[in-house]
Image 1: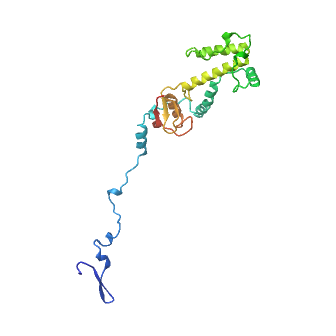
Image 2: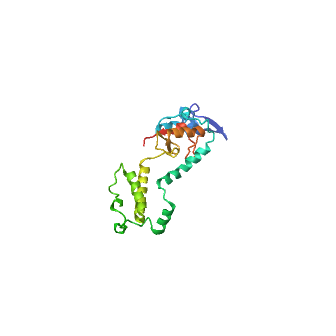
Image 3: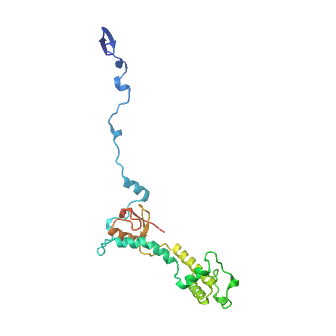
Length: 232
């Protein structure tokens, strides 16, 4: 028995140590932390996750256009931030101040509708606005012609309807042709940033990053490797 179990004497009595009754000793009573390969943590590469989701980097620092003649990028960013308001103003056609005052004073643009019976007798039928027969190619020129005729007639309702048609036409053109907020021209090779998802032309992006590594629209840190080509 002494060979199989550990004995000890206490108060004149020989006893067997209780831990010797368990095979493996105290180590078998609970979990034991052991170092091994399973405890080695792999390094996490965040860039690999972005490449899996958005694809590999398409641009590097070599693609950036350095602005040697213009070291002050603040002026460029101010122009870009104001360009959004400029695009909105470009949608509305210019209206003479005296005509604008007369329209605001006499007629509510939102509620007024054209009444064919209310047109002055002096206005010829050729001067009436035909919104249904406008051709796609000549629409802009005919809009200008009808607007000029409406101003010449002096009829307030004709002027309002002509202005309303012109505004709708400009809004539709502006929606159909997206433009870059930096150069205010239709996109040429549009790029988007996976940081903020703003879209600008490739040349505009590279010139902007040549001054500072910031998005010109939201001022978030943007690097060339964050840019991706898109197709509109």
